[in-house]
Image (cartoon, rainbow, N blue to C red; front, side):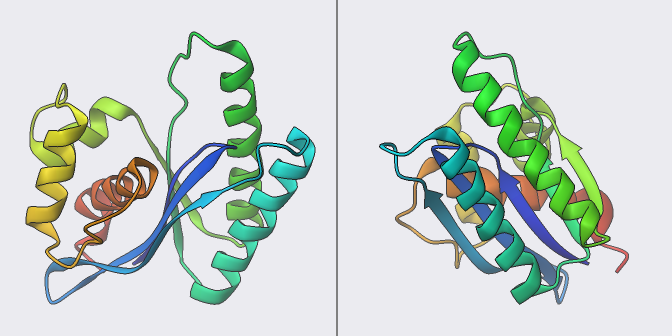
Length: 159
């Protein structure tokens, strides 16, 4: 199983391409994509779509894993993230990828064993599980890696 794991957003999008090799999670690629805050939302969403389509074409994942949208007090932000998720879900299905969605507590549970872990605890555990993880990365990149770990832990060990 090769997973494109995504922490969705329209300002910053965390992405990771991961798979199991010799019984361990391996990061083949990870990044945090930032869109230009001075451009219209539609242009930013278009850019996200292009980037995700390129990642799917280049890395040929058979699975896309994405974090679910959690309630956000800022409705404008929540709508923008929901629109970005819609584009990503469409591209995943267009590429005939399996699609898995995970909530924040489910991801924290899979990575740390505790569903209410804070971000530093999650990032610390990621670094323990995958020593080759980028040491300097934005939260969104680590969040995408956590999504990938969750997906591989639940569905990827048999492949």
